[in-house]
Length: 208
Image 1 (cartoon, rainbow, N blue to C red):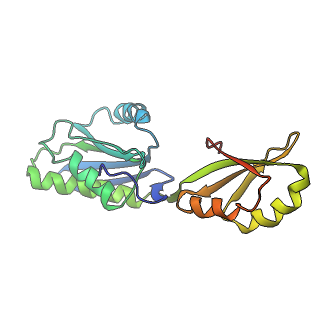
Image 2: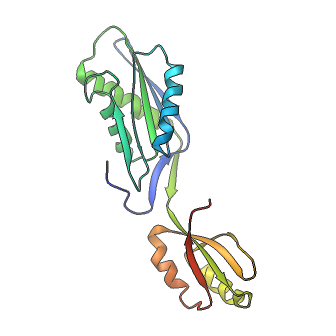
Image 3: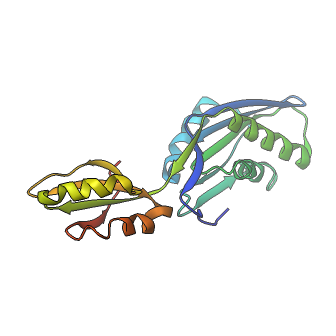
């Protein structure tokens, strides 16, 4: 779970998902949501706590930032590793990043035991994650190229044949474009423009 992403592609979710699981009177409400940064979690958690203020437990797990992994789980008063861990395992089993899941429990009067709790929290999380809209994310490196206007024909003859994607123009006293390329294809793309000797290229921050 702590290993950073290999490659330049990962799966996340585009929309929230909700589920309801019942066992011997207890209700487990699973709430899955996108979470691009762990600093956003507290506000989401507070909102859910207010909405389900009368619930006995608000257990959770999240996993985000695949290049610099952040993850956490919390049992919120349930026996150790009976709630947060199975929720985290559900996220990991789906191979998802930038996702949080909170499972709210309304106690039904009958103790379920550790095994029953593990099953309930895992199931509620899994079912909530089935209700989301998935999203494929690709990681890019971003560049700006500059060249004399006199070289425009050569650049536009070669550039469309490379792995670079033109994002927008950056015209000034000289010509320029902002580009992006998938991280896994970066070296190959740079080699494809080697023959453009009048071209200057620099890596820039993502402006998407």
